[in-house]
Length: 331
Image (cartoon, rainbow, N blue to C red):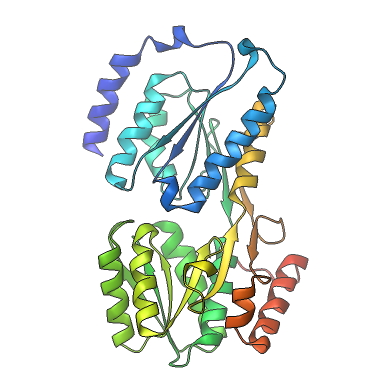
């Protein structure tokens, strides 16, 4: 934090005169905290914003068109703070749009130095700041359903979750909801391990091997590029993988037993359209889940149907239906 404060001060001096260079048309920056090729969630973020901007610009002359810049910040999270700070310090973007639970902490000191900078954050929660709008997906629902199918499919009664790192949503929402679902499904224990980063596939594989040696036969990886190592370990050891945030059945047919996904591209598109139409509710933190249509559990993929027994699929379908109707609530 001390290094970030020093950098803030330096960049403030460097860019303090940039406001005079801003154009009359709106300008948007998309901050990707990762690499789009490695993360469908971030690819969908950029896709949704781009679609909204392209639609808005259709038929307009150049002076009316919205400009869009997409920055991929890479997998080194230690660099995210300085890179999003640099975007804000340019003072030419009317809004910076991003997606990650860690973003509220990263932008808090930036807002102190650049109080006019606006942010739209998906998959994050920050309420009460007049320059920030957030939408948090109901990851309790995602994690519970993923845990439930894991509990139904485990033979050893032992399942595990491998995360890239610990962060509030992981510790307070995803892990406890996954554990609750797994135990409701019949698991007796849930192991939790940390990779330490979002890219080390070798370490991810080693952690998975260790879990498998302990008798765990279903693993949920939420660790970015490191997940590939977990998948390889699962395939080699003939255990199951539960998948999060996108349709992952094709990553390992017969090994992946479930996929919950966020409709990030549609959420990003809607949030961008609202900004362009001056409808953003600044200061508000919203929640979107299965009932709202922004989270779903894949049930129609042929690989899901061929891998998971019909009896279990029927149980899961009933739970999903209750969540969609509002008969069941998971928070």
